[in-house]
Image (cartoon, rainbow, N blue to C red; front, side, top):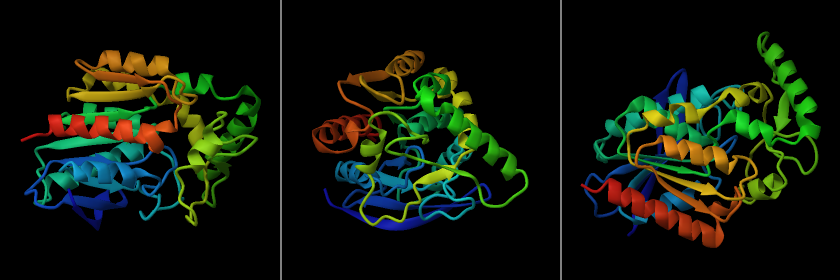
Length: 295
């Protein structure tokens, strides 16, 4: 099925979010899926491939950048904040529910990695979405903190504390690389550097660093604590060899969601974004959304 794509903007909190609306051709007021990326990423980092797959299945899709990211305005740039990201998801829901081009009564949420946790929190708090797909999700800050390399912890936390203090007085933030071949970074697992870069298009103007203060908040972010409040049909796809979001925590989160459809694949954290595993995973997700959002 062919589709049209257009740029959109919608208000959120103290600013606005920029994104894309995919509309399948020949489908009147289709159901809609709301999507955003994982930690420190822009929507152009492979999300278009999932959005196109869903649009060809007859679903409208809204893909957006969080405030301070990508095409969305806001300072400081690339400010990672679970609270702000969830607020942006809620604002995106308000946007699609008031857009006559789509069916605001048939809405799904999609998230991956960090946003895989956000969609669980958003669904729990909104209470009126019809389907949730959470892919290789971040569900437990403590669990992810335990697998962060010990040799980099002191440097990462010292930069985070310095940035947190500086943020109280203004000025440019003290940053931390998102990925680094060797050394302290936001993501420091053995597969993070190559895996993350595989999603980033060539010639992308992406700073590759974030205000370091997020390191202080990550261990306290626990989407699993709200999982039992998710009432929408939910598909969780986990990675058996996940180096960032331990699969044991993901299983526990799935067990807290009544009727959750859980699939554990023999892959690593970044394998679902391209190649044969992308084809398999995106097919599973498109079929789930089509089933749950059918009129």
